[in-house]
Amino acid sequence: MSDRCWVLEGELESLNMKVDSLETNVEKERALTKKMGAKCRELGELESLNLKVDYLETETKKERVVSGKMGDRCRELERELESLVLKVDSLETEVEKERALSKKMGVKGRELEGEISRLQCENQYPIPAIRNPELTMKQDTELALAGSKYADC
Image 1 (cartoon, helix red, strand yellow):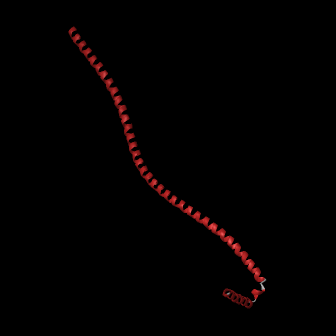
Image 2 (tube, helix red, strand yellow; image 1 turned 120 degrees about the vertical axis):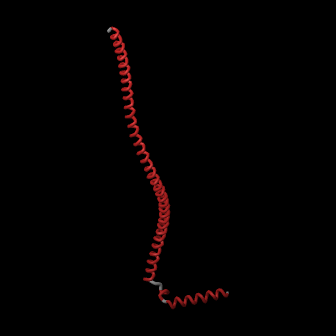
Image 3 (cartoon, rainbow, N blue to C red; image 1 turned 135 degrees about the horizontal axis):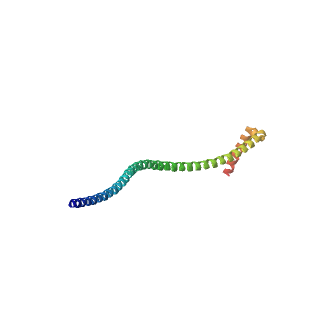
């Protein structure tokens, strides 16, 4: 029996070593499983981030298209603004010319009003020679005759 105990003790020791080895392996596997779980979570997060990146790239492309259209519209509006500025400058020049002409016409109008007033006053009190058209015609004829005689001399 002692041999048998001896053999059983050897087997028990061998089994204990195997158990220790297996426990060590289990610990290693648990640690590896834990690492793999962490990696899986990281991969899940990475997949989520990849989806976000894809979404953001799509949105960026859309924004580039919109931005390009807005840039085109902005350039179009800038050209239109330049055209309007030129028109405004032209109209301002024209207005200045019109103001100068209006001022000149105002002066001329006042001069003519003065002339009309003067003429009205003269017509209220006409010169006697102007009142008699026959006398005026006779004087004009005499002056013309005198002028031709002078020319003959």
